Length: 262
Image (cartoon, rainbow, N blue to C red; front, side, top):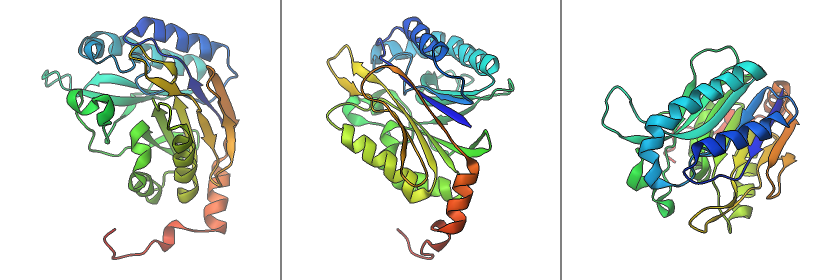
């Protein structure tokens, strides 16, 4: 399976400009079977724009993602500010990764569990409370978002329940670029799984600079694709058999200590 991570600059609060840029980048890239967009790729951290964007832009962008998935015959995933529950109508917002399958079926979604207080997520968003696994091209894929990377227990639980691929949308800033690489590699190696990470790059309107550095990591910790700070789509070939063979040859998960409350 060819996987692609889309690294892009984001115009804060300008959903249509960001959609056009994502489409341009994807159109100029090699065909892939899964495309991963960054965290909050339609808005960035434009807090004031979030309520209106969740109500008016996100439904349209979900239609665009679904159309891209159908046209490309690929899974298309990425994080958008969204209404927690449209039926409730209480206006609560979440940072939600949407995962659209190529067959036109209903999307899966995951809400960011670990909200990042330095960027005031906790003041505007409701944290997620459930884990999700989605079939993607022969893999069981587990989604997560940015700050989640610092909490390894989330990934270990996913791996113990069969996940072989992690999808991570991020807006990870400087000066913590080396931490991003470290956590991405660690989450892959310790769980013997592939990891795709798509990060925002470039400056935000408030002066925050995002570090790029999107990666695709093998189950052994090899960087199969690495981005610098430029925009682009970065791809690598993934094999479900590679995960299975590694876990058979050098099993780790079956030997976790039982009966200990870590």
